[in-house]
Image (cartoon, helix red, strand yellow):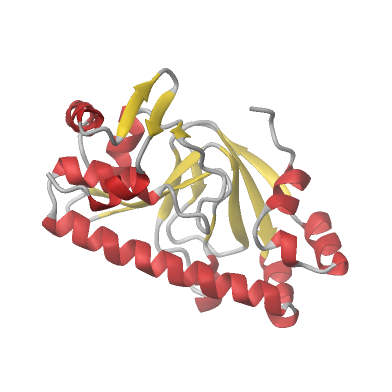
Length: 226
């Protein structure tokens, strides 16, 4: 797949397509790109909030640590996704870490630009309202999954969650996630993920292809329960 430039990424976003020419011109002038290597931090817990963040290319996980030191992953963000708007709206320090699960190119919109759009662009506000609503639904579903469902079902729901057209507009049927990455996002070992994927493949919901997992039935993954 051809590498997308920062400007191409901004113009292709759901929110970028509804901005006025003046608004888009300021966004293009103010936003900047950062490269974060695999294992590096995109954002750190406790830091001041200076940017709204998007993923041009790569994969990140949003996570935190319990008092006992256990890592808790809230969600992953793939190419095309943006995050951090809730923290910017609350004007609080960041409550979580964001780590790159592979080499990742990040787009950053300065706080001043984000607030300028918030104050003057009705379409941008509509986008944020939908974004927050989709994110809330995602986390409610994740709480149910983590508390009530087995690993096989968690893996199925993890894959299905990638197919949210608002949060992850760039995802295609061949999901380029490794079994290790799925393990990080679903809270399971790589070996356990492998077993779950084989079960899902036998059920006709996915196919294990070279370079990733081909999703054959998104609704089936959403409804799957072992």
